[in-house]
Length: 418
Image 1 (tube, one colour):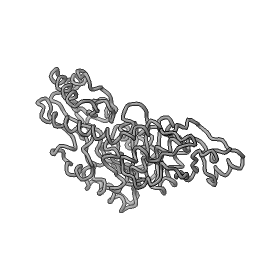
Image 2 (cartoon, helix red, strand yellow):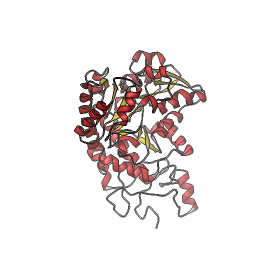
Image 3 (cartoon, one colour):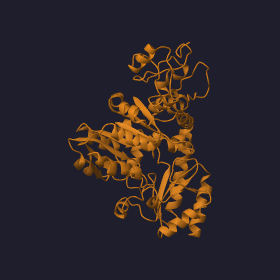
Image 4 (cartoon, rainbow, N blue to C red):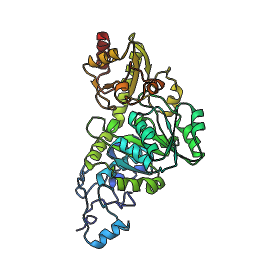
């Protein structure tokens, strides 16, 4: 009996769309978001399992040599090798595509693998890239240090300044990269306006949407061409597994992303894809609670005598507050702030916390706090950090799902000890 006769879901190497008549996918395009988060992309084997199946296999077998030939030529449905595609991984990709309104996607081993793939798959020597200066440290490293090694010209701009974008974009610009909100300063970039500027010269916009999550912001609907995530963050949301994903249209995927993905091997493991599928089931509930807690904490810190300033898109004094209200469905899950004093006082704050953990991760059920100047952005020069507003007394907290009063009391007692 062949896998197809047994009812096992198979995908073509060059056509990764669902091919089975499966109840779980019937009418899925019309489902609302919370239903998609639970059921989207689900494909069941002949066993009719409730939870998504985990296909822990590196390869696939063929009944005949002719079947293998047909599959490699794309003439026969089926998987070839899990570096190219895997049923569990594809379920995760399909579910994310439904959430984002994307035509296609490829899941990766980490968020940085997704960022790297989204850029490198389409660039060559002589091309030009524009990027917002306010980026996660590793993203900035790829754009500012790695791309120029391969003869790719890079221009950095202040992401909130549309005149700088307008001046930087050239006829030979191939793509641009930005985060909104940015890490860790929570700057908001006008995605639609930047996309429009890029499209005038035929360039593509890549948006790292990890801080907003697909629950709060959908960049493709705002004009972006490619969206990347570190699924390690909110999508898993419980500190268990690494992962990333690139979402785009079919044409970009087939021409650029698939060849790079297949031959450089940044693929996600089936186990991690299964973990991400479980995370997606509760993503909306968790993000809603994260946002509620973050908003409460931001107001608490804003009024605290030991805090000099708070950066949070949900506060009216945020420089891009109106844009955040228009572009996002919620304020986000991260709060950044400057306390009075210096690095020593910032370290004492972190060291005296009892509930909130010191960690450079974010989007976790647990509240996590970090000192960006000495962790995520330590490779930047003092001048570069100052330009981004990352001082030695600057702190970023990813607000978790604990009782908000316990979080506030924990910070309050730590500030008192400082």
